[in-house]
Length: 166
Image (cartoon, rainbow, N blue to C red; front, side, top):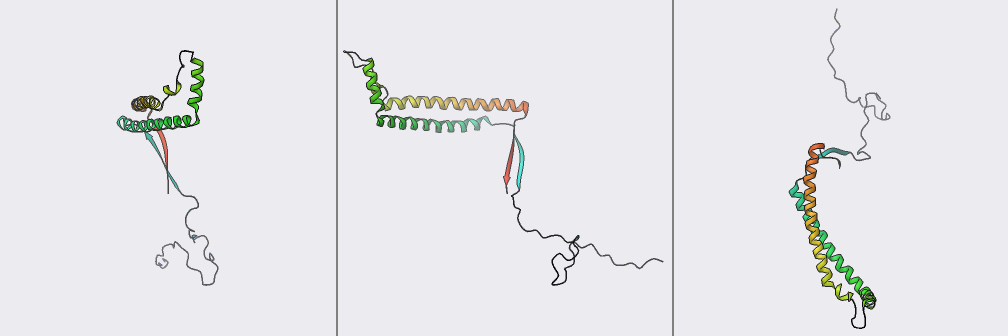
């Protein structure tokens, strides 16, 4: 004889609540899950490994051009500020006097350092250097992008690991 079939009861995810007044966790300890207390103590960080396979030479040229112009402006400003500070300290008059005494004779006054290192002359020289720097830095950065693209074709490029904080 076959035993009487009983209705199917699916397994419960959580144990039945304990009687009121019973200590928490007094039910079936193996089946009851502990409640989450909240956020993690350390934030989870997602990481991705990426590869720089190609650098666009046109964008490299534009960025290097703008950065080298900014460097050129900073060079001109720094040279003018340095000249003004040295002039206010009397460096040019002191050194110029010493040089004119050393190079002068009875007929001539010698070399005039103050007229040779005047502010307009220093700024023109610095501007010429800044323009040459802009041209060379832009050309070298663009050439570097072409060389990087050639070498990245052989070795695969530079691998980076980027992380995102949540």
